[in-house]
Length: 372
Image (cartoon, rainbow, N blue to C red):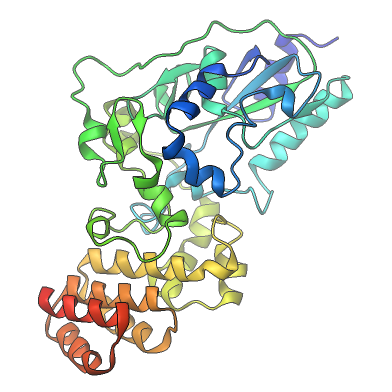
């Protein structure tokens, strides 16, 4: 019968940075949070994310005895500058669709467990961060992220992976709580562009840039466009400003070759003009939350990011998209972006469009002219 030491040894052989153990008891604290903040989480649940079902590990494995938590540092290598500030780092080398990186190592770990008589599940809706905290592997930041007590210089650039197993292992000592230093004056709360973080460990997910970028409904509200900056998919602001992450961010890291190979595909101009075939081959395998029938959201996000860049070289691309794209949400955002960038060429293009523009596009063109 394999021991905890055997499990730890195998996990490290497969490249995981830390390993912890906790019970398979339900996360009753999470149940209370979801009930208390039902309105905040309702949009996520409506989209099919079964947060309530993830409270009890035995819902995925009836005879669950423990949870083995594997800790992955997803920022062990540097990412291309062209991706940073536009796409959240946790997606730069995401293989949940391609299954050619982390997924293989998880599969190999589970295969090893099975060879030793242990069945396992990796529930997508399990509260991974709570599992890691209950295993004593770290604590939380005011920004709601989990901070390792060993990995990546005790930063939040980590991904806990809960593996539910039908064996009982000795659990670690829980380490719930906020580990932020007393001298930190709520840097993450102050820096959150959209005000999504309202208090320590309190977030309105529907105002988070990450949520807005891939789940937001319709045309991005006017008051959120500038705060969302150049982010197209995801956001790292509350982690970037965190003092606890400073040591890891300050060091020189080797380049992530996998991310570098695909970086050119994520140029905002290519995203703004992409067709379904391009999306399915170049974008979706790496950043997949938006299905093919929602490429309008990708294009709208790219247009908004272009506008907030204030880069005049994007003006011709936005004008082109206004003429070629049939989705009014994309066209409306292109008009807004032209107004945000401003300049003679942007104004001239908007003036040409104004007479024939109607509805929401017409209103955005009018407003954009005022911005110019």
